[in-house]
Length: 152
Image (cartoon, helix red, strand yellow):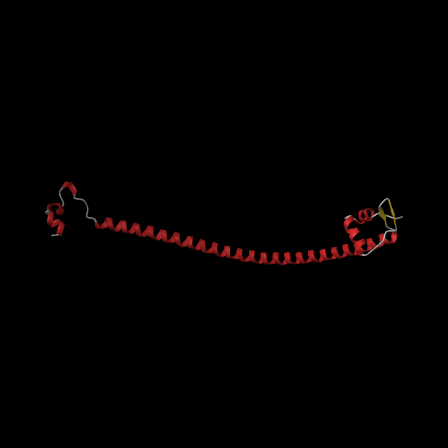
């Protein structure tokens, strides 16, 4: 049974223009023509289907190869990223340890400073003479202004 270009193209799932170009390129003649519509016999139909199935198979093989290559690249990148992530995690752990050590040292420094300030206060309290008892003026107040000023 003879078929039109459209019928053959629909069967193989292609655009009719693609099938038409193949027919023209290969100088294939129609089996017969009716009302301006060209019909092609089964031999031509099988030739067309054979040609386009090879192209489709080749395209699928190429696509599979491309997909495999992409998967390989993605796997390698994934491995590289995992390694980098492990390195970064180690760096973060090391920095956290350093931060804890710095915080411990800062706490110790603050404690030492507080202790030093307390000692200074105690020494200052020991150095200041006691206040005179019974409201009597101190020896210092009996001296004159200039004597107190120049320490005489």
